[in-house]
Length: 266
Length: 264
Image: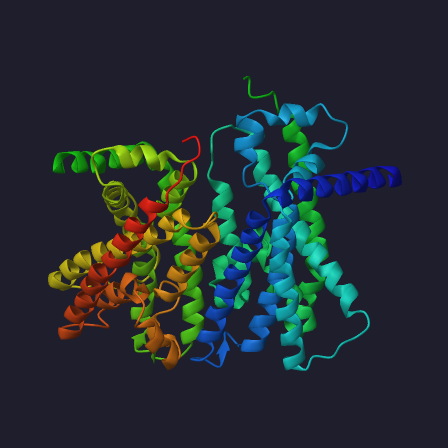
């Protein structure tokens, strides 16, 4: 087990090293990507700031609380964008048949595919998230305990596992059918529902965001742990549990899919 | 000559038609986005009757129609032009006995026609079923809106031409293309109507072509602007469409002298 983890970590180092060697040949492209990620966060930030000029609260949440939640969302979203990227999975690995190459190697296929598609510029969002969250933390005057950073890491890890699990499960669909389902881009849009407290949605959507596509665990619930919101605090502690469950689900579907996979035949 | 340009519209329309299935999921994606903003705005209104001059019901209609208008006027001409300049194929296009920019606009029209009939129209039906959208009862308002979104399309396309042509002058204009996209979403009123911005920003934005793309036609559609104000909105669009021709011609003249294709 330990040897396996060490092996994967060494792979991680190699891949990241190679990424920077190839990408920094075209430095401009790299910075353009960072820049446009920043623009997107800026756009959503401007939206929140303008909207709160006209209302004191959003479904009972103040401006600073909404910013805090958005900051948390950005941290998880940025990390996810940087290290989990299935956007071209069907096209590149199934239709063009690169999956065959991956399967001839000793490392786990999922590890390889995640590492081949790392996208560090996306980390810019995570950095912005930290800044937003920290400034909201200060202006809300929240207490800061020594274990808060540890809790943040645990909760973000849980959120990241939820994202990874859901997208791994969706990518596995490609093993069963090679027809383009168009479900991936769809999911990237649904994910944005997590930016705001689930309380603003209707009952059905709230249920979906909590239990079926639990994007509320990548935003309002874990953020409520730090905010003074006793009613959502229990949900916050569920984050790592939901994360493990969804990641396990994704992994099982993936492994079954790989066993079923017969190649593109080209 | 006109026949050649009309043919370009037809070809692009048919090309798009071949990929129409891709746009069915596009409709769902737009519906999801409209949903996100619908619920957010509902929470913003809370108990308030009217904010920024929009009633809560008008706001729902505004979001729906703004996103669906975006489905129509959006195109990738900026990236297409930049790509053709970078890979040098623009040189071959320039030799041909037609105007390169007009060709791009015609292809844009073909795509626009497709997006209007296959994307925006069915999308509007779906959105009306999902959300409490209030359609205008007055046929004149519909007519004016239909004219106005063509100007939205024209102004957006003109901005795309300008940003795309920057590839003649800088090595990499991808950053500029993305910046323009965010600017259009944020400052044209798709996400937030102009009247919600602070006054200084409203005054500043009034001097940019962005509000003419979404805010004006959507305001007319929702009934926030009517009568003389609506006609004035159309006039603003016409003026912008005319004004933007100037930088396009200037850039095009300058760029033909600058173009240097390696290998080609």
